[in-house]
Image (tube, rainbow, N blue to C red):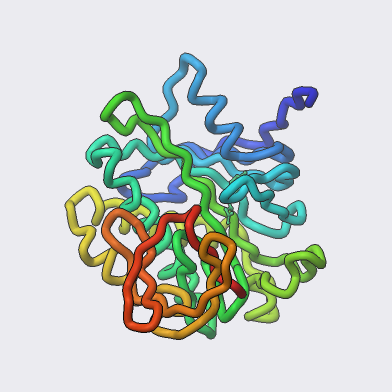
Amino acid sequence: MGTITPLILFVLQSNTFSGLFDGQNVITLQRTPSTNEYLKNELTKSTPLREGTVIMAVDQYAGRGQKGAVWVSEPGKNLTFSLLLTPTFLHPRHQFLLTVAISVAIAKCLETLLPEPVKIKWPNDLFVGDRKIGGILIENILKGNVWKSAIVGIGINVNQTAFPTDIARHTSSIYHLLHQETDLLTLLHDLGRHIEQAYNELKQSAHENLLAYYRQHLYRLNERHPFLVEGIRVHGTVTGVTENGRLQVTFDGHMADFDIKEIAFVI
Ligand code: BTN
């Protein structure tokens, strides 16, 4: 693929995130393949980036999702951004706790806006009903046993009204639920506040509260539904998640736990 230098529209010395992220940069790119890729590439350069740097795209045309999926977003309609964090205070074996903190922060933020409950589809999708409204792709940079940085990619469907047919049935947006447009920068600001709060809780080892919220807001918690386990369709009930991020599911009274490659929801 040829290299396209993204146009940096403006660099805001902004207070988008107060406190911890005070005075950080929010860099808005008019067009880039993926904000995660952009941020990753910036990290290879000699100028160090501050924790809390946000790369946001107006038109992210080759967005990446979990498990090699693509993330499709209509230009100018949604939030597609990547946030740089340096969770050096956490051992890499506790990576799941960052997933928890970010998922909880986004769920709490969206809850303040939306008329319906926001659920966390394990491990880190944001759902309203049976429809996805947002996704998270965290990419970690480790050095031995030290967690150097995390690129936290976040996509939220905000003002988009139509989605590609293959995902339309299970996709929603804030517009679908509110029937009115939401200002993207205001939402980015609100998300920043919630992320900052959750991240501070994580720093202060208050992850039990975050985990409790995560567990209580799991999509399909305590409901019997079909799953695919090793390609076989089985009915089970989500009962929780372990501290290292394995999904706990009960099948006919017998509990098992799974990692992301081992089980899939049937929606
Ligand atoms: C998923 O649900 O599969 C994760 C979606 C993550 C999408 C965001 S949009 C901003 C950032 N840049 C990317 O290429 N992906 C993430």
